[in-house]
Length: 192
Image (tube, rainbow, N blue to C red; front, side):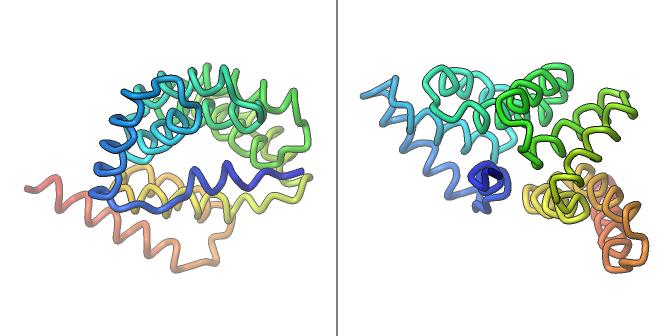
């Protein structure tokens, strides 16, 4: 049973101004009801999309205390730790999610990413192999993350994900061109 809610949360598209406005609304509502599970969850997702991972982690830990779907909850918290470059904690959360649902293909993919960043390449390969065995399209998953990072303006991370996709299928010239475009954007930004 693959949970698409986590993917929708991770890859949702938001305009930054709408995010700021929504964050303000949610924070005001939380003043009235500070333990509202849905509002806390929404705030954590908003903070994630604003790249405020440390605060999103703090909020989502509270959500996880009440969350019914622990698989999705641990996986999302793992992704927050991953984004915050706390790879050991990310691995711990992804493993908790997979202990509850070993058939969670996207969870195996996320765990592979965390192991890779933590420098444990053999564990990363095993996790990716499980994801592939469970029919996850890893090439597409890397492209999805690359596009998300690009929309967020995190070009270095987008390049990293596009590069991983290109390593999987170097025949796709549009991915190679995308990497070059983003590298030029970074250079232009650095020159300012």
